[in-house]
Length: 338
Image (cartoon, rainbow, N blue to C red):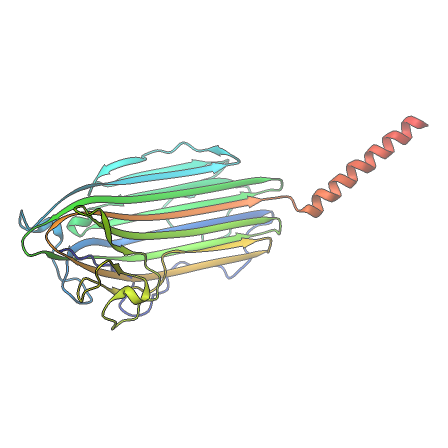
């Protein structure tokens, strides 16, 4: 049987990130910025121990025949500016445990990637465009994986314009469990930063992240485990089912349990028509376990970061422009009449 464990933040409350972030309304006017940033560290799949913490061996180090696995990771990044997409590089499927870098950039003067740090200061007023970056280092089956997802969209100037970015990383693998079954855990630490800032009222922005884990029993084709961390887990409960963070098709004692779930990973920030700078800045440890009988299983681990920024002329401005054009037309008619 199989069990997955998730490492989130520290055992207690989520820790604050070290990013220095201005208080509010620092986006240049005119301008808009949307951003989503996720940094997973110590991402690993190990044998479960039925308790909070990681003491089991990575599945890639177990004796042959105990657990047999194979799989790949898929990285996709996109960026669009005013309907024109950027050219993605490094997208595609990679053998499980193979490091990759995938990125997309579009727009004049746009360079958000750098050292993979969130855009915490006031971005240069002349930048415009969208960008995305995703990468994987190490191998989760050996307990060494580190994964980045970074989506950034920012605009400057007036007029009807928009930028968006999207990063999606998915690990899919097959696992055969032998003997009496196995207990596995998925665990990781996460730094997450989301920002939606406006420097003018005729704009809207969005930064959003999602994360989920699912396991399918190949013999029946049914999903027997689905974990979408939502920050509602209450330590001490027998199963995570009551909090919605861990769902098992057959909720028997020990089938499925969440040990750490400090905040929701399905979250975002948005602003619309109000000068503001909304920021979500979190760090935490996640851990979940699943116990399965011997057999064949398919795993899917999916994470996504999305951003969007739009500048839309205000109705009042459009009306004033229309009145101005009407006035010019009347003046022109009068001049011809004379």
